[in-house]
Amino acid sequence: MRVLIACEYSGAVRDAFIRAGHYAASCDLLPSDSPLGDHYQGNVLDILDHGWDLMVAHPPCTHLAVSGAKHFAKKQASGVQQDALSFVQMLLDAPILRIALENPISIISSRIRKPDQIIQPYQFGHEATKTTCLWLKGLPHLLPTDIVGKGERHVTKGGKSLPKWYNLPPSPTRWKERSKTFQGIADAMANQWGNL
Image 1 (cartoon, rainbow, N blue to C red):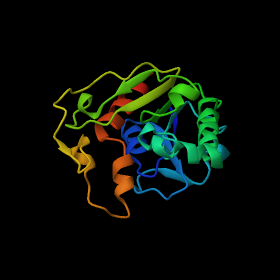
Image 2 (tube, one colour; image 1 turned 90 degrees about the horizontal axis):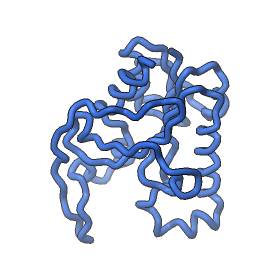
Image 3 (tube, helix red, strand yellow; image 1 turned 120 degrees about the horizontal axis):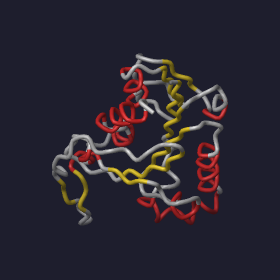
Image 4 (tube, helix red, strand yellow; image 1 turned 90 degrees about the vertical axis):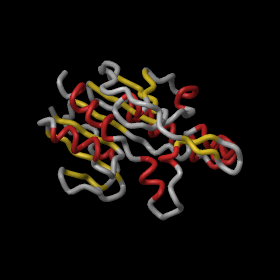
């Protein structure tokens, strides 16, 4: 199977598909953190029509996630939110038979369509919560592989309860760690969707 992992710098999902015996390539504006497989550094729209059997897309959530709703008016006024939604729609409309698009809880649900499935890392062997929505085309729901505890939480100064894994010290790469796909989810995608 030829698999495109769109908007992925980490290589986590791409490498899981490679380990499962597929040809997989990632694409992102950033270089890949993993040297294992092929990586196209550039705009994914340039390679959507290259004969892929499956695409797993991770479009940036910066202008879409409801966690940043207090900034929506400014993002709508500047046009960046509509640009982000248009990009998501282009990915969903790609000429690829099987597509999975993942994002946190976001305005994709109200502006494009509701997700087909919502998953959590604790369903795939990680004691953590990170609500992840999946918009699917031609793919079945991911089945949980190893349900464990939800993990520790901490309370912020503002009184919010957040997953402890999310409480990383400030650093230039903190956003990368927070956005990376949990390995158990990446493996489930490769093992379940790669066998269709």
